[in-house]
Image 1: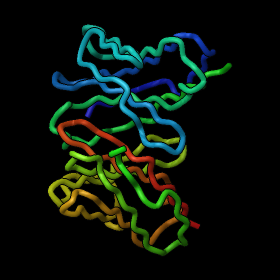
Image 2: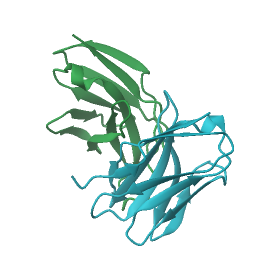
Image 3: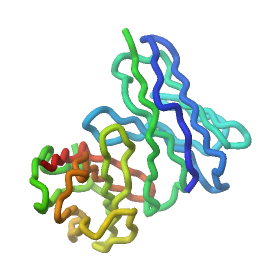
Image 4: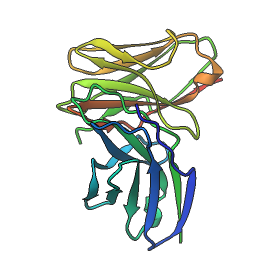
Length: 112
Length: 110
């Protein structure tokens, strides 16, 4: 499975846009990029998934360049409730038998 | 809410004891995976159950074992507890790549 590298932590003020970049130089052709969010004492929660270019949902946007060796999770106008750990995962979007592999994630702190 | 349910939420055990954690999967999910999350670390994969069999296993000793029942619920058993087993244990159910995590069981070994 492709290894990912993310910043350990980031700080942001409320109302700002936050971009978290993840490096995955060894991504395979059939790998997808998935981001999860985790609050303290809760399990990770799916945010967004993409294969290439740009994906947007009601929570975030995911930007993936043509070489797919990195990706950027963009959170628009963050609030205090966005304070959490964000994980970038790379793997096949198959029938569900491939275990998710988590790194240490990026701890985002949103300040008022 | 038909999400993933884990019990108990918190547990304190003594070194050397045995513990059983339980997980009820999200409705419609047939696969259950267990993860161990130490403080400040990402979740680490323990093993995965499908059709009542262990299908995949991470780098965990045999002290960690599990079971899946016909209704897809699952148990995680840990024998001979060590202080280092203190962690948040997460259960994730899935089907066709759609994963849902429970809120976990916080195990403290003293």
